Length: 171
Ligand code: S3P
Image 1 (tube, helix red, strand yellow):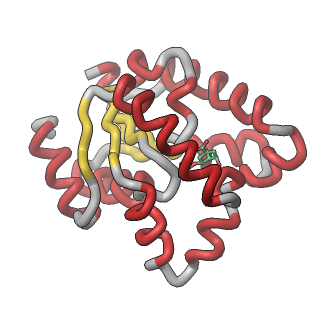
Image 2 (tube, protein in one colour):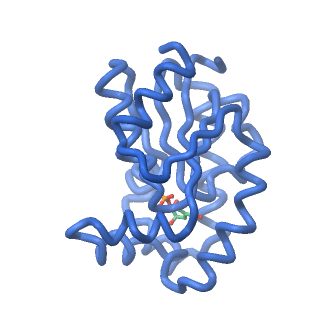
């Protein structure tokens, strides 16, 4: 496994963060989230980066971060933003797990939270549902192409997904 890292990849709202936190707790590995790292590095929220600097600037920060992850991070779980797979070195950073789900199941998951509105509001690419649906269908084959392991997440709890990862990767 590259630097003994595990990347959790998938569309916005699929539950990468929840799975990463539980996997971290169960395996004792450090959990890093690329959106959180970018927000700290830029000292501002993702939503504001998109609004003030534009999406190309955000994508460049993802590329810069990917170089640091490759050179400096080991033995960790890395939860990546839904578009982070665009970087050129994903496979050199970690073993990549694609958490797969239909768009409908993702929306259902988001809407099940008390703070669903907040979860939607903070994601600039989840404002227009038609566009988001189009985006997930464009990305699905690209996610598959980047993935070392694919896990179907629909109808499963985070705990079940974590157990599946632990058993598949023999962690
Ligand atoms: C994005 C996903 C977001 C965040 C940004 C762009 C995307 O992360 O990086 O809003 O392009 O899919 P999450 O997947 O954690 O929501």
